Length: 340
Ligand code: KG4
Ligand code: ZN
Picture 1 (cartoon, helix red, strand yellow):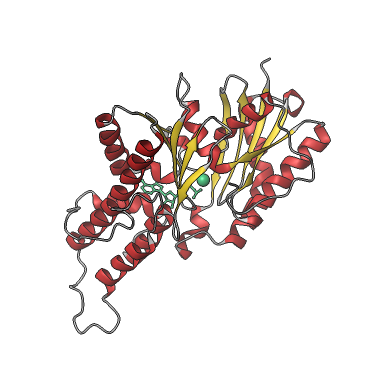
Picture 2 (spheres, protein in one colour):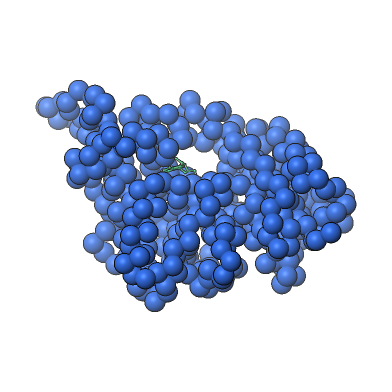
């Protein structure tokens, strides 16, 4: 039997486990999403997320093992995302992983969740995708990386306030659309005019590799609900106006992300761009990144749809640590913030 590892993911609001072969074959990938629990709040509630992980972690691991058709004794390592994420959520996956590693006497491997999002690009590609500029756009992150190889990815820049996915979720709430906001805004934007509103694109005209979406969110809020103290109220919301706001908002986010990727490619002189994270599922973003990369003769690798949002299969990155004997000790702690 080929070598197998069990990867566990619980950084935010998905409880996930996967059994992965040494050749990066995914024998199983189970994801239990909590979005129904957080929907009414318009965003992830950390305490609810942690409790749900506690309830789901063992059934999810059991499903991953049985779907793969293997036993715990067939495993060579246990891997788990230890950072970054919500502290209560991280602790559940990490505690489960430590316990399994201890009782099975297996090496424990710590996964950087953001690096794993980018490694999802390598999993879908026959050739080496690194070195590359790496973009991770999710509900918690909007980061650009200098991906020198699978485990060496210095951060080039990130958001100074909201993450892109967070902006999608908050703007969806303003527009009365369902959570998670990305897919519902994308759907609403289908019938809209993306040039109807000229929403702000922070840092667009600067070379600085940074993002900011809170001003954009406020601009949408004022457009929809009116500016505090203003005499004139905004026009009545109807489906046409809603579609135009959604499309213009989506365009503002996408334009700025594509621009920053292009600037990073230029600054580093790379001709490969890897993209991961939930927002990478966005159709306009995928289309516009493709146009930019075609024009620049740059290879674009976007993680497969099922591995864009949080999952444990992207924990295949743990094999890179395994090969380099980079094992974690059983007293490893979780780290909520980005590890630079
Ligand atoms: O990577 P992910 O599953 O979880 C985090 O680690 O955050 O990303 C979830 C985020 C949510 O904010 C969601 O609104 C966004 O990804 N998202 C999208 C789309 N699908 C999911 N954003 C824009 N367009 C989409 N089609
Ligand atoms: Zn993520």
